Image (cartoon, rainbow, N blue to C red):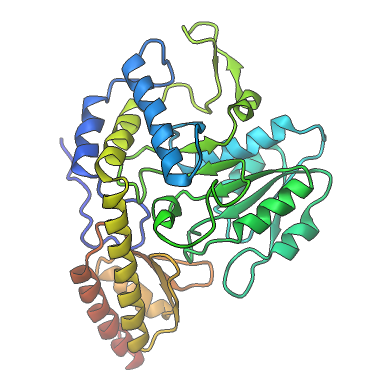
Length: 358
């Protein structure tokens, strides 16, 4: 039995979106290929090389190294693994801001490293002073976030890079979601802006590729030597990726999306998303909600538990921040018409809750 495809017309909190038509078609054509065995699947391996080069253009690094991963979690785990494997200390620690994605908790658990979580500034960005206080001679990685999952905030990446390198640590930027929006802003976040070592950027988020298509990039190819293992039964001699078999569909889809959309299509999508986020923030504030101003196209606003559940009952696909605000991510599939309908429902349910009903 064929299932029905995902209907996105009420999905407001996902950081994934409908694939671009060219990306969808490319994914279908490469379903049976495996870039994890590049000598056998040469065509998709060549596409992956081109994807890495194109992602380098997006994030401002010449001649990047990297690969197409399953997503941001894998890429973040690999960044931690890379730092741990290069370290000389027997008690490595990784310093991350409180806004870091939960994948770093997974990485610390799997890899047996200490995770040191630092406080945030009032604007939800990393506190550089706190990061520096948490670093020591056993720190192997300092992490910054460029587009946080809860509030869409961008950490002071150049300052974090300076702290990390002062302690001899690698510096990693998680731009899984923000990486396809930030090139069209004035933020300092990329390889071109700071001496960062590695970065996560996901084509299957704002990049409009099919899932799975994450990305891990490094400034220097030799960083991947710390990840390489021998692969004696394959035609290629070694492998630095976390998984063996990987999705050729994701690689081909990312390639097609980047060819179709970089840079003008992504610029237009980013500007439209930001305009929608700012409109929504104003509309929710006018409806009486406390709103966190959107730095990137993500809006958080406080609602009661009753109102949130009522909105879910009206089939809006919503999630909440750790502090309980609803969050709306203005992905490419989110239209102004959707947001107008959502705001009307917010006004309706909040009024109903205020009267003591549902």
